Length: 308
Length: 308
Image (tube, rainbow over all chains, first blue to last red; front, side, top):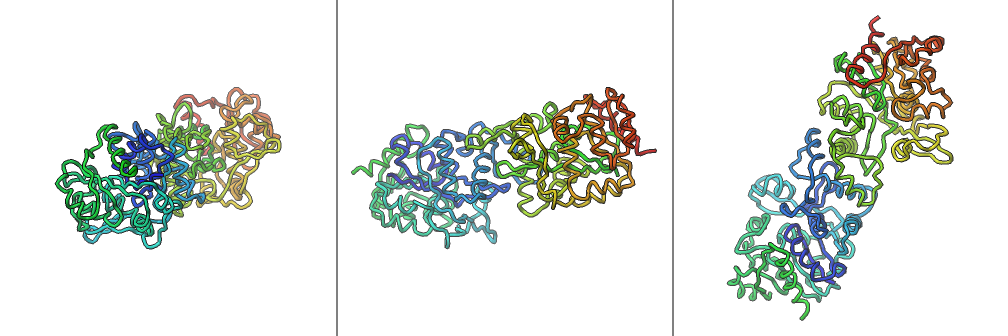
């Protein structure tokens, strides 16, 4: 079994490659729920949905989130009812949130509903939320504390971030099977996701980081930072405001207590010695994922580390 | 102030005429909530929405319910999540149910949310649900008890109905202002709605029927039965199964304890003596509402009774 720790768009693109080189039923994905937020009374799980929609071939390929060809008719009328609709939810996408919310009101855990959604959309991977408990990512900007989605989507990452905090990290327990999957994995991938608010939010659930430190499986990361910049999202900004260098070195340092190897882009080849000095094996390759061939190549590169 | 007791499509069409002859702020509509039902965790109020959408000019004119031009993309994906989607809810329509449900979860009463919806959609009428309490219409068919919507929409009124019952009628209290509106009205209209499951469901809320019996206002009904048949919906069938003749006479008999006058169609002119014998003034006119002129004509006919 291969386990992948995943955030949103970057992870989903990598996983599209992975499901083409490893049978879906051998893949367990641990997804980030720090981005989860309620809109219109509905429980929205942006990262879980990006992964599911992408792997199910439903995702809007340009945006990287939501469902391709989706319409926004409901949202337009919601505006007339006075809602602030800065977080776009398409009409088809709404079905997922309605289903999730109704099932959770009925007593189902997020992990159980997520499994149903994955299965209903025809997938055979296992997708586990990092936790079933309350866990939310906030950023502090000046005197303001705001939900990560407010920073990311409403304010388009414009505010200067002092620090990131995870509400619920003191009490949230890993969802069922998360720890066991890590312990029993034959290989683990840290997807090219934001090390602070995506992977970092998963690692902030008590027990997950320790399990990665203890597992016998090889752990391979893919750097989301290429040439000192993030491919998508605010990883570089948030790394800097967390006092971490916005580079593959910074990424390596976030994971140095458990990472065996880090895949970095060719443009960062000069960082090889420094990564090696952290006790991590550097693997240099083309990491930008424009085509499916790019994604498959990257997935092959990652899992080749598990076959030694 | 004019008060109108209203069901769904027939009432909404009549009210379209009424708002053209009486200023909206002088109209209080008491709507039926016996049809209310939950789908996907959302509180759906079909009759209240038909009235609101119709008066706001949003209604789908052919169906008589829902929003014109609405799409059903969300519902299609809900099917994939395993929901039975025999009750069609369009994408725009969903916004109303989301708003209502979220507000009610937050502690607002149905009457308060209804007032917000009416106002947000630009209307100036007062629309009161008959009750804020649990009140649901069921039909008994053979050994089966089913929600009215199941009978009406899922089974397309095919089952033979033994009787109709109102769950909650023992405890449901009239919503705020309903009784006072009836008491202080200058005129009251019983819209051309189903006397059993629409108007009957309103009258089954304790205190409403008695208030109609006591008010000093003239009360004028419009028969939904023309030539022994219902214009729309199962009124004729349900009247028969309740032991009531499916005719304007049957309608008159349902309301005879409070009705002053009943508007009947020209084709029923021969019923005049019998209606008069019930102590109700018969008013014969064209009652079918095909054009806006028909609706205005009927509304004028009704309110002319209040001006004596």
